[in-house]
Image 1 (cartoon, helix red, strand yellow):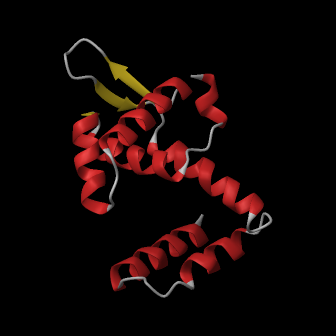
Image 2 (cartoon, rainbow, N blue to C red):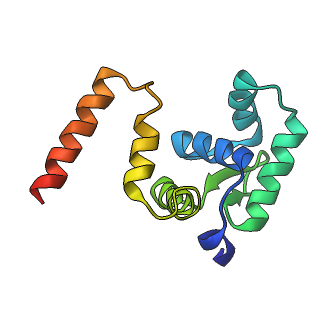
Amino acid sequence: MAKSKKYHPTESEMEILQILWEKEQATVREVHEVMEAVKDTGYTTTLKTMQNMTDKGLLERDTDTRTHVYRPLLSREKTQESVLNKMLNGLFKGSESNLVMGALSRKELSKEEIIEIQNYLKQFEQE
């Protein structure tokens, strides 16, 4: 478990974590069905990745039932914070404004997202 605090999940591991955060727990088959709807991936690849994630302390496996049920050991919030800090300190050289401007410059924001960001900035200014 200690490894997971400093470990940054790979892209495939992040995809699995996203599914498990939504479902809270799932079998390999359930995770694989969601992943396969998005990209061509083999069942054994999903199985092996989830087994490796368990060994790394990213997932917990309940072996009490015939089909093993997996749960994430990393919270979504802590993982987002860790990945964001890695990006901030690496790619953006510690500049939070460059990180935010880079995210906003994608021009794929919906009207609702823009309003949400504006509201957040207003709250931030008031603090």
